[in-house]
Length: 144
Image 1 (cartoon, rainbow, N blue to C red):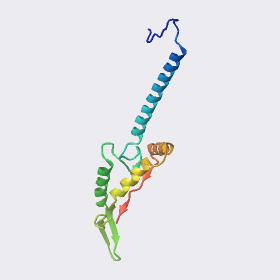
Image 2 (spheres, rainbow, N blue to C red):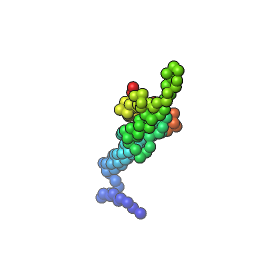
Image 3 (tube, rainbow, N blue to C red):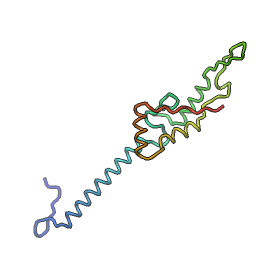
Image 4 (tube, helix red, strand yellow):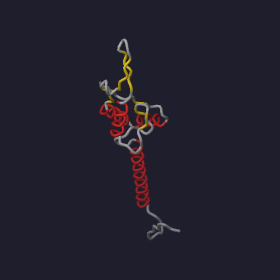
């Protein structure tokens, strides 16, 4: 099966045509490679999300929730966590919310997104591989 047939009066492909074909094929391969690279990069480093596999405060971001919504839910949950306070002669059980201690959602989001986007490509790939192994746990920011 012949896909292309190049011929001239002598039945051979000229040097100019060979160069043109080579340049065209190489340009197509480079364009396909660049497109694949950018598609892979956007899949590995999505905007507005933690790195895949990166723990934030000991938990993974669910794939179907935005970072801000998930951190806000965690702020509410952790605000209900018990805190035992020693008043000298007695222990009182309060919640972290009662004490005015809560997760700083804005600061935690900022640090999480900065961690995902910081550095050049090789540094980001190294952090992405570390996160995929479960080696990265970014602590929550707290406000009082």
